[in-house]
Length: 453
Image (spheres, one colour):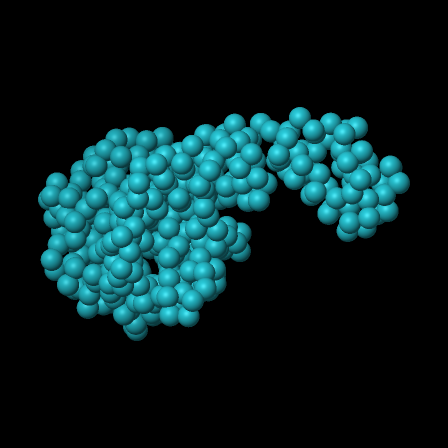
C-alpha cells in the first residue's frame, strides 16, 4: 500500500522500513495516520547526514536521550502531508534501569538488525516492518498470525515492566480493533497493573502525544470501550488508573430501574455513548457520572453533585485540560435532570440554562444512560422528543445575545450602567423564552421600564 510519504522516503535512496502501527493497520485494511521509518545500518549522525540534503532535520529525544530525527522536507507537497515532520530512527535497543518509563537506557548501534529492533516493542501485532525497496514484510514474532486470529499477544515477559503504559495501550487496542488478549497477556496485565503508579498522569489522561490524547482517552474513543473497560476492571488496571472506582465495583443499589451493579452500569453507559458516536467529554462523563453514588448513599445529598466534585478531582489528577475538566464536571453535575413534559418552551429554557453544546451533550448522555436501564419506553421517547425540540428551539431566541435589545439600548433609554442591567436582560430573556413573539425592540423596552428598580 504505497503512500505519498512512502514514495518520497523511497526516493531518498536510503534503505528504510516503515514500522509498527502503520504496517499493522495497512494489513487490517484500515486507515492510518503517521508513518514511522527505521533505517538499519546507520548511527544517529549518519542518519542526519543522509537526510540533511532533503530538508530541515531535528533531533528527537525521549527524556533527554536521542532516539532519532524528524525530517521536515523541502518538498512542499510532502511537507503538507506530514506537517509535523517524518520520523526516522536508527536501530536501537532499550534497556530498563528501573520501574518508571524514564528509567531506561537507549543504545543505538548500526549492527542491530531490524528483527532485533522490533524486539523492543510491546505486542506482536506492532512488531512488523515493511521494506520500502522490495515490499518485503518482516515479521519475526508471529504478528501476522495474531492479526489473523485477532489476538493481542505481549511480545516479552518484561514488556509491561519496561513501560507500564503498555497495559493501557493494549486495552486501547482492544477498544479500537476488537482484539482479544491472550491468556498469558491477561495474566501479565494482572501481575503488572500496579506499575501504572509510576506512569505520568499526562500519558494516561491529558495526553503528551502529538494528538493531545492520553491512552485512557484513546481507549474511550474506540468503538468497543465497554469491552476494554471490563478487562481493565478484571485485571486491576481500572482501579490503578481511577482509584475511586474501587467504591463502585460490585455495588448493588437495589433499584428496579438500575438492576446492574454500579460499575457494570457505568461501563454499559460508556459503551452506549460510543454507539451514539459521542465526543470525548460525553464518554468521560459516562465513565464518571455515578461515581458519587456511594458517598450520596452513605451521607445523603445529590449523587450528581457529589460525583461532580469527585470527577473534578480525577480529571485534575489525570491532567486533562481545564476546558475539558469544566465540560465533563458540568455534565456529571447536571446529568440527572428531569424531563417529564417536553415542549418547545422547555427546550428553549434548557438551551438557555446549559448553552447549546452542553445541552446536546446532556441529551446524548441521558439517551445512553436510559438505554441500559429498565425504564418505560415512554421515558426514552421523551429524550428523543427533547432532542427534536432542541433542534427546533435553536432557531428561536434563547440567549441574552439573541434579544432585540442589549445593555447599550437600556443605557440609551436612561438606565444606569450597573450589574442590574444584566438582571433586567435575563428577566427579559425569561419572557422571550416563554413567548418568542415578544422579542421586538419596543415591547422589550416597555417591559424593561416596568422592571426598572
